[in-house]
Image (cartoon, rainbow, N blue to C red; front, side):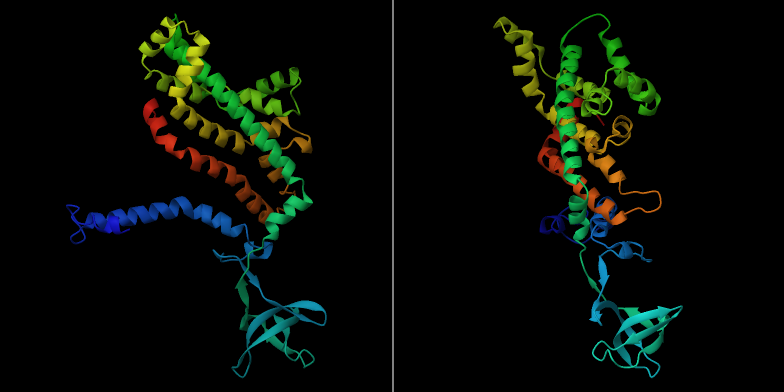
Length: 349
């Protein structure tokens, strides 16, 4: 903060405030709110009870109404304005229409007062409903969904890096007829959405016996045109003289690929790894098509089980969505330093 304030002013000498400083601060603060606001709202909402989620207007913090035990039952507390103008904290015994019968919790045997519901305000405190996180793991086999998602993501990412880097190596370091045409054909597949090839892809997976198998989710998605293009553009920057020197030392083509090209392409591989983890972890449509047995569900399909035909358990969905975000955030935190170098090296904008 001190570093930023010291550079205010038109010339950056720390003297006075220029209008560009104010515009910059507004832009940065507004962008931060727009970027992180939905995530913060999601995390805060994941700690709300179903009643708090249904409130209007909604609140940022999770509030819960205070209760008191009267005659062996928990009764909600309200701040009530009585007819004589006094304000008291009372518990609601029952409610009929717009009239509620309220009683002083310190004198529960006294005659209940009849209060219009417009003259009372719920007594609430900030309360984090941690059961939103614990109950899905106890009532549902959420660890199984988590394990399936981790398996699909890890295996798909490893195979994606391997196959895409091999294709990129061939397209960047070998001269053969039709190389540019093959590259254009691969890039052209970016224009074909999954919904177009969904039926033929399903037929292939069914014919190969991969339906209701996690490998049926993994294998059709490992060859990505984005990954081939990204890695090829990066490998083009590796000098061919290094490969020629290795060939003069009798290195095989596999050794050149494995020991020279792959280590030098680490920044681009890290970027593709981040993309692959995000794609596979958040993938919903293709696993939904391939998997019909609950013990094979991934996390995203498991979340869909909380949405029934007549009732949607939003508090569980929000909490488990936060859990599902954690691995992606962790991967991004550890590999973010490769993103700038990798994208800059591939020429992507």
